[in-house]
Length: 303
View (cartoon, rainbow, N blue to C red):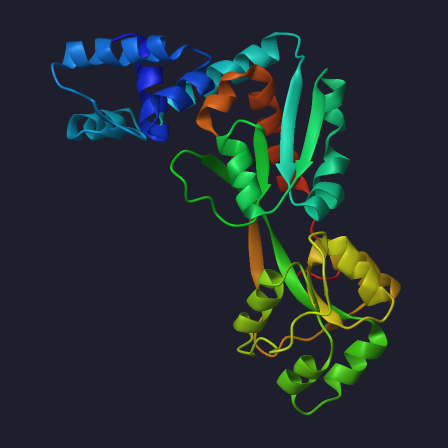
């Protein structure tokens, strides 16, 4: 069996599609089909069943994929990393993530990539958009809050963010002065990322509090917008520590103490294994993981 044939098999197996595997590998569909057919001939068993929407792996394909595990990906990633260290880097790397995290945490750590000769294309989006961008090859690396559960993606866990209910000092004082925190939060206008209110919902559930029946007065897919409105005295919301720490230190925001606990989210850097065949992507991934793991927590907010 040749390495190229195994690589092709792995991509077809992950993507359940000859055409998608061909796109990722930079091969023609006939070439991919030929690689699969050659493997099937050597094994004496079919690896995939063709159907209208792609291919379905057979039991022998499942066994072969399990035997390979991530060994092929690891070998190729190691080779790409060595090539990156031993050659002049160049080209474009696409990096995506939530807009506020990209601005506050990622952007300040990109200079080493530029100094290495890379050009960067930064993209922003929500969770579903980021997954789609990775799988469609529109970005090489993506920062995602939730743990990726798609077998086609690889990821590395980075640091955590603590979530704090915040408001201007005057609004926070009024909420905290109430004998009934749930009622005070429900009666005070709140702001959210979107109408589903994922960040607000996480904090409330962790503290055994109900989600307000009233919809948010403001939604914005960039939490920095909400932070600014809070500082101007508009309602309350929940922000990660890296977004509210400086404002709390300046006294323009105040934290509403949680009655039970301060919930956490963990950020992940995700990629498709095939992306690491490019030395520039392997280099960027390694540098970003190292830089973000070294990042100091927000002053005065992590406990």
